[in-house]
Length: 300
Ligand SMILES: [Zn+2]
Image (cartoon, rainbow, N blue to C red; front, side):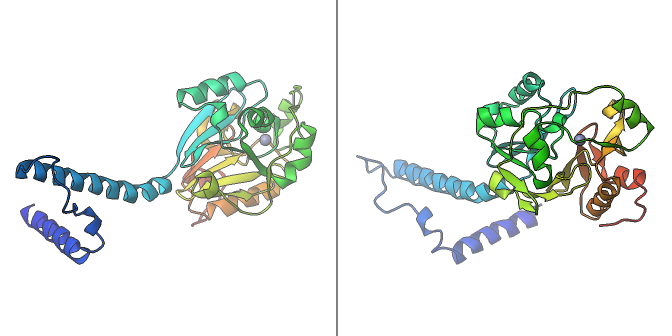
């Protein structure tokens, strides 16, 4: 639209005029001429390039903070026993959960597809201390020096390297308990124990880790400012561990405290979360959480 272009041109001119002193460093110095020539054309070319270079630097400087604030790319890594999430933050790759002890090879392969090595990992945030979520934490830290972040309430479980006894939430869960599962893993202690809200910006992520005991005493969730949340086993996606209807929010098979876990789901539903990434199955929408946990008119 010609009128709009003209208005834009005027705005640029005005802005330049008003900020002449601020932008003076963009004006080529008088002495800047084509070496060894009095050719005015060559002179103009050099001065134009000077302006272009400085304009580029100005744009890059303006773009840098914008890049840091950009939402982290999330890569959903589906291991055989559980989900791991690779968050590509502004300060390096971060994992939410580590996977089970026998799944290092598929985890390495999945990260390699994203150009990430285990050695590159900056931090691993563990939603809780169960073997299928925290099983590789110790080995990842050994290889990468990544900071391990976990809820304080799971300290003893992680130090023991074995799942606490669990409370089944239904008949199917009782059936599962009849099959022996290897609940042991390499013990470790977290570098950062979360017992109050933890700002994740130091790891290049716009968001926070919130302690939410319920599934286990040290369960935590990661809530990004853009409305994506990583809630581990607080919610289960679909049936048969997410094999069927993975995007339907449902009750997990086991919780240490069912009522407390439900209170966490209600509390999260009041936040502006649009998408929940789960330990099994998922992701699920805020609407699916509201519908399947009968949260009715819970609004943010
Ligand atoms: Zn669990």
